[in-house]
Image 1 (cartoon, rainbow, N blue to C red):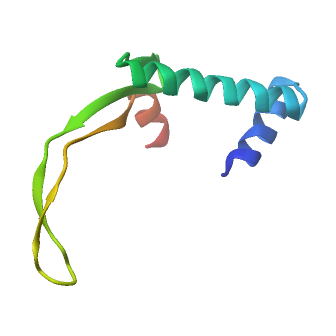
Image 2 (image 1 turned 60 degrees about the vertical axis):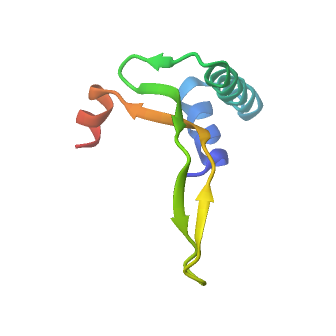
Length: 90
């Protein structure tokens, strides 16, 4: 399912226009992104938690040349599914 299919499904399930559903989805995504960027966790009970994690710098290897390279530290978003979501999928 891609974003336009999700918008169409939400619009029909919530009895909204596609434009309203798209605005709602975009607003929700932007709000989650801003909160996680600030360092806040976003927890949706029954669905999961969006968090921000740090990955340490490490040494890697260029697969073409075999030369060692340093991979810099970085901050990444992370999603942990909730138990209800896991149970539903299984």
